[in-house]
Length: 312
Length: 312
Image 1: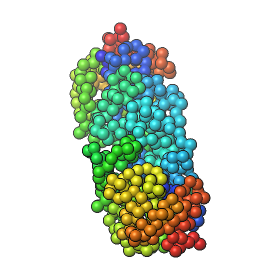
Image 2 (image 1 turned 90 degrees about the vertical axis):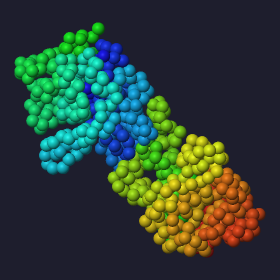
Image 3 (image 1 turned 30 degrees about the vertical axis):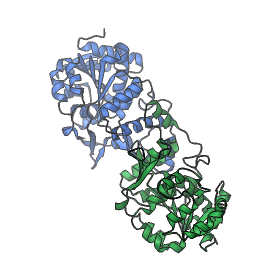
């Protein structure tokens, strides 16, 4: 059994590679819900959907999010009406949000709805939201004010300085059913190459996670989302720096060191391996850029092998 | 100034005709919200939308509801997911619900949102929901149980016996801003050919409406939705019978007699004119079947003329 901590696009790509090298039904992904938002009355869960669409083979390969070949009829009409269209929702994607929102309104939990969506899409990896309770990432802006994650990420295009990061609701959130067991029982816990601050941050902010991860430290392997001092995608490097961590594989190692024994870094960062190991984290160097499924599968194999459990 | 009490398709057609014979900006339509429902997290207001789409020239001429030439991408995908698809929502129609729900969640009232949607669609008739508070029609089934209106109307195709009709929330609902004034100040109040039980019923169930209408009785003219003992569309005849009223123009006259002085009936019911007048309601006989805009305009002219105010 393999358990992965997952954000959005980077995690989805690694998981897509992983199902090429191990039986998908042996993988559990614990997915960030800090990005979740309510818009137009709909419950939108961007990271869960990105992972789901990618594993279902539906994801847009260009953007990494959304559904390939989407139509935009609803958004175009909403634009005509003068509605909120900064958060682009394709027509088929909207069906996911309609389904989720309706089921939640009927009393289903987010875990249950996620399992139903995965089944409907033929996805065999077990997807667990880290919590069925609301955990919501809010960013304090250096210029003043605080905004929810999607305002920061999409509307402001993460082009503003951040002074604080807060996971509203995290203190009271309970891990979703199966989450702690998945950490406890996994042979390997993989931290996907997701943003440490706003993707993995909200996951480990849920009470119990850090404690259970800490107990499994020897078997926890992280993949650096930072390559050569820059994020592969998104604001990870900037947010790390703003949070007081060096935006490099060394900063990632320091961030994860309390509960991860091993960090996988790209060859571009080979020279930093000794600095990573100086943080008390074993450094494994490999090709970490997942430009296609084959490379993602190669990276997944290297990651699983990094803590002594090569794919059988 | 003309004020109309409106349900869905029948009302929309009469109003569409009315704007051909009087300046649209002199018309206020007070619209039923008893059919409103929440589905997929979205606030759906079927009668407001039917009137809006019809006046905007967008309505599907076949069904009378929805938008002509709609695409159904979201519904098709929702069907694939095993979601609730019995209530058909076209893609462009969904944009209306997204807009409305988002604005309501921001604190706008239903009146405000309706005015915004009308403006965006270029509709000059003033559309007022009868109340900004929730009024919801529930039907007690003769076979047991109670269902909200759309379950009865769409899911059960109104093919079940009804024992009770209840307008949940009506007792506490306040008329929306402008509603009572529109009744007070109108030269003519037109009761559109809508279902007396479940379209006009929830409108006049809002406190204040009956009292204000009663004061204007001489200027209130209703159009019978029943022609030759049958509803032009929908379950009006059946629901009237189940409510203890004869499903005929005479039953309609008796229903509205306390606050309407005049009933316009189709030529098919000419023989019943004396029976209508025996209810204390003046009977005006004309062509009341609105098979096209010209006939709807003709009917609107006859209706406005019926209480001595022919269109200028």
